Amino acid sequence: MVSASDFIGRDVITVGDFQRDEILFLLDAADRFDAQHGRPLAGRVIATLFFEPSTRTRLSFESAVGRLGGNCIGFAEAGVSSQAKGESLTDTVRVVEGYSDLLLIRHPKEGAARLAAEYVGIPVVNCGDGAHQHPTQTFLDLYTIRREVGRLDNLHVVFAGDLRYGRAVHSLVTVLALFDAKITLVSPGFLRLPEEQLQALDALGVVHEETESLEEALPGADVLYMTRVQRERFSDPLEYEKFKDTYRLDLKMLEHGSDELAILHPLPRVTEIAPEVDAKPHAAYFRQAHYGVAVRKALLALLLGCADEVLA
Ligand code: CP
Image 1 (cartoon, rainbow, N blue to C red):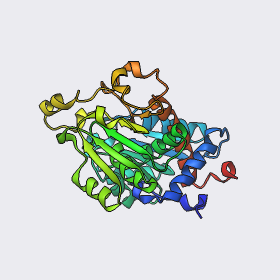
Image 2: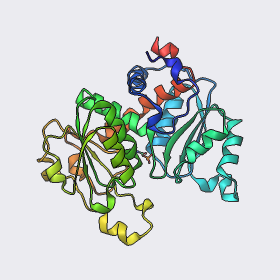
Image 3: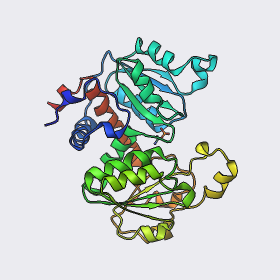
């Protein structure tokens, strides 16, 4: 049986670091932390080392720390850190380890968070490493699905957009295997889910299909996970121009989905969801961003061994 002590001192690098029961324990803890107004992180310092832009991940973590009575230090872009003077990531984290109790790292290079974790003795949380993984996004996505749909098991989840570079997709798609999901992958050929991820789905026995048509994928879906085509991951700007407007969910397209469809998006969005969709009850993406605070409060308190009072 999972307990809060199982989380203490752990790194969060990929979703594969967590078992199904541990994820469910975290989501239950998030329910408790959602209504928590104490100060279990009083005296703790969390470092946010963000070498890539962020709104939700950094600010929801900072909000979580503040609401739990802790303090944040850090930077929001590489240019204001000593990386601009040539300092290596491993030197930076070894220094900041002495200033803080836990490191939150976002970095454009795949594997950066794992590398950092090898150099420090305090927990490291991967807040997105290149096109690789974004595990805390996945935890809040699962939390959102459970809140919005009412369950996690046996869902039909449609992923649409940039499945090649989308780290939020890469993290969520394999975790859904733990919950017996059926998955439909909607993308143009160039932006397909990487082959190794497709093979992982096969190995996990996940029922999955691929199509280029959002219209055809929507009937029968419980969840639509829309994603942005990520300009910053394209080496050729012309390729980006070719694919950036491939999909657009508007009210007409939404008619192909059921009345119970939940629409998620890790955000930011560009043009892939029309603003007219925001007012529909299906549109869960702003609630999803807000749920991130509860999930990150619970995660931080668990990793730092400060959750007992709230969970008692
Ligand atoms: N979903 C997400 O990671 O958003 P940010 O890039 O704003 O942190």
